[in-house]
Length: 72
Image 1 (cartoon, rainbow, N blue to C red):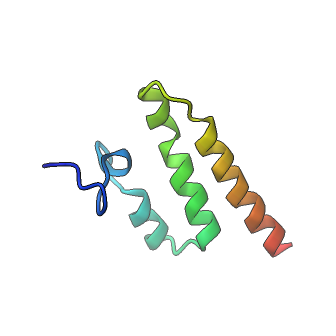
Image 2 (cartoon, helix red, strand yellow):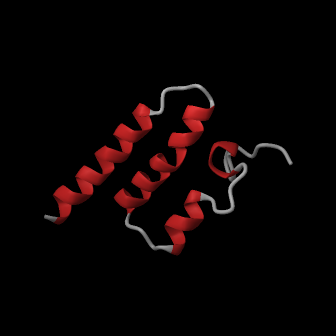
């Protein structure tokens, strides 16, 4: 099976039982929380690839902070 970069990119689905998008939809997460989950789910993969995962964690933090601010 080849990497379908649009519909099922390897960095989200390869070797996983659950694709982050499926979890987001199943849990019916609002936009900001879905984005945070997506970026957190990539953290370990970035480490495994030898690339800096901190940017994705900062993106997750950004979306969590926006969600909190919008709901306070």
